Image (tube, chains in turn brown, red, purple, orange):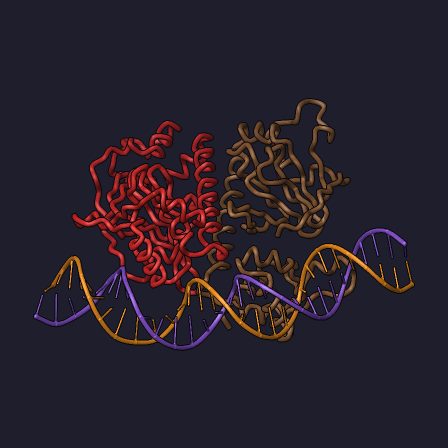
Amino acid sequence: MTRTAPQVRRRASRNAFDCTLCRELLDAGVSPEQGADFDTGIYDYEYEHASNLYRVAAPVDAVHSILAGTVKIVKAEPTGNQRIVRVLRTGDIAEVECISSPTFEHTAIAAGSVHACRIPIAWFRQGLAGSVRMQMLLLQQSLAALKETETWFSRLTARATPIRTRTAQLLLRLRIDAGDRILRFNVDEMGAILNIRPETVSRVLSDFGRLGIVAKERGSVTAQLYFRGNIAALEKFAQGI
Amino acid sequence: MTRTAPQVRRRASRNAFDCTLCRELLDAGVSPEQGADFDTGIYDYEYEHASNLYRVAAPVDAVHSILAGTVKIVKAEPTGNQRIVRVLRTGDIAEVECISSPTFEHTAIAAGSVHACRIPIAWFRQGLAGSVRMQMLLLQQSLAALKETETWFSRLTARATPIRTRTAQLLLRLRIDAGDRILRFNVDEMGAILNIRPETVSRVLSDFGRLGIVAKERGSVTAQLYFRGNIAALEKFAQGI
DNA sequence: CGCTCCGTTGAAACGAATCAATGAAGGTGG
DNA sequence: CCACCTTCATTGATTCGTTTCAACGGAGCG
């Protein structure tokens, strides 16, 4: 989990109004100073796979609204190792914690290609103070994050449940929409979530592979990011067979 | 963890205005209908040790503000076993989740004697809609809960860390104020937090006892609720010796 | 006094961690 | 275009820690 991650990010072409948060802010009548345009720092950025949206302990300069893609939220332990505490999807707002914290409490890493809107913190705070709808929106987000984290941890780290079961649960949680595609994390990352060693993840995944339940996608380069899974079978395993 | 818990609760004598939440609501100009008095259902209740403030899946009838004491927040797993996802202290607001949920998502159990203010949900929601300060207050609470849960889980369930270490960390987290008193959970409960078997908890605690680091309080009946701990020594263990 | 609840302790079984070696894939430079 | 190197996944053999099963003991209570 200490492998280096590229820091690349580039401005994309999308309109800022695709972002719920931006719309909400503008609706609230809080415009980013007069003559607002995209030079104020509100953009749709595209982040490469494995790049950081922001890093732990860095001063909070912006709030990120996920327009497309999946983002891993990583918490660093004092012991040095890192754990993934939740996963953000399209529509989520990253690091609502920034309201009461001057620095980021997590690191956010793109899983696959990610589009995110970066809203300058000053504008965001201004908007928050003046808009009841903004506050409710954030409250909802915060509660959603709480629920996600609780479930994530309490189900996925339950030692009573065998690792086979927990791995199946994790794979189901990483499913893309309704199909049989599953977001593919590497063995280190899955270990960081399930709290087991990468070797063990590999063993379980190999088992699943032999049973024909999970297969790695072959073909194009980007396809490596996904598994193909037998969802019905996985659900059985997830319930402890 | 399936031991029965008494359901006792009785009305205490304290004034509702000791409760931050109540004050906030009244300040917001939202009074519980005219002629408001304590018959509206706003009370300072006293809960006995091990009694429930509310139970999972029950319809949300009230929000609880903890005036004094410690409350365990328990999440039930589909597998049947229960885990303590966080601990509430004086000043905390229980189950902020109720804003977006019709039923309780957790069970709240008093650890020792607990004073809590029960605010009828209708009044609470009314106040929330009209008060910016209320919303910010809840947002803060929600974020605090999120942080607490993350830390709780990510530190205490880290499999890499030996159980000795994690137990020491837990004990430090259960410390009462600045002294050497530590809130005493039973072996089942500590197991439910650390995600280990009660027998294992017992073994570790016995070790600590032999090392003179932790001692069970002797004497009065209520004193059973506490340990006496050598804080400095525990901190060493908590850092992995 | 005997019951039950809860904590304690022991011995054995099991499962994941650890250590170590091999293999597949991708990138780089000659 | 191929050899080389790095990264990451895989697999095996062994060790270690927790669980499991089981029995015992103290405390509180009817």
